Length: 338
Image (cartoon, rainbow, N blue to C red; front, top):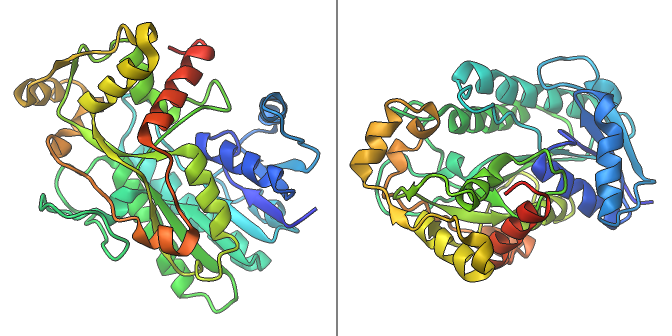
C-alpha cells in the first residue's frame, strides 16, 4: 500500500473519480462524508466499476463544523480537498454557498497543517482566474477574478473567496505543508454515483429537451477523468507545490454541444434542442428564473483558458470534447437519468 490520502466530500462527482484513481494506483484512501450512513453506497458504486475497495475507509466530517477534521487527518500523508457546496436549484445564494466554501476550506487547511500533512491539492474553478472585463483574453493562473464585480453569481464568488482564503492562510504558515490549486472549467463526463448529477445537468437537460431553445452561452469542457488525474499528479509533481493550474479542454457554445450530441447519439438525442434563444429573451427570462440570472454576464462571451502550465508541469493532455460529451450522455442514458 502506498500513501494514505484524505479526500474530502467523498460522495461528490469529482471526489468519486479521485477516489477511484487513487485506489487504482494502490493508495489507501480515507474519504470524508457528512454522514457515515453513505459509506456503503460509495463502496458499492466503486466495486460496480471494478475497483478494489479494501484500501478505502471513511471519516465523518462536515465543512460547516469543526468536529471530525482532526481525526480525519490522522495518519494521512496528503489531502485532496475537493468538497465544495453547489447549492440546490433556486437556493444558490451567497449565504448558502460562501460560508461553507470559504470557512470549510479553512477548517480543512487548519486541520491538515496541524496534522503535518505534506501536500494539499484543492479544487478551485477557472472562474477564479478569469479576466473580470469582457476583453478577449483567456483565463490564466496569474489572473485573479474580482469578487466585487456586479452580478457575480454566488457559486463563482464562493470559489474566488475560498481559494483566496486558502492562499492567504498558507502564506501565514511556517510548516512544511504545501498547497496546490486546480482550476477546472465545466466538469463533464460519466458519473460513478447515479444520484450525484452535479455539473452534468447541462447535458442531462439537453437530452430532455431543456431548454427548448439554446441560449448564446458556452464554456470550456473539463473531463472529470482528466480532472481527477490532474489532482493525483499534483500530489507527486515536484514543481506543483505553491502553484495554480488551469485544467480544461475545448471551449464550446451550447449550439455546438447540441450538434456533438446529435452526431454522436443519433436517435438518443432526438429531444436535444436545435433552435437558438435570442439574448433579449434570455435576459427577460432571467428576471424571473434565478437559475438563469447568474449567466446573464456570460451571454456571447468566450471563456477560454490557457492550460500550457498544466501541460508543461503536470503532463496535462485533455480528452477530445466529443469523447467527454458523448461518454457523459451515454452514461446518463444508461443510468436512466435522461
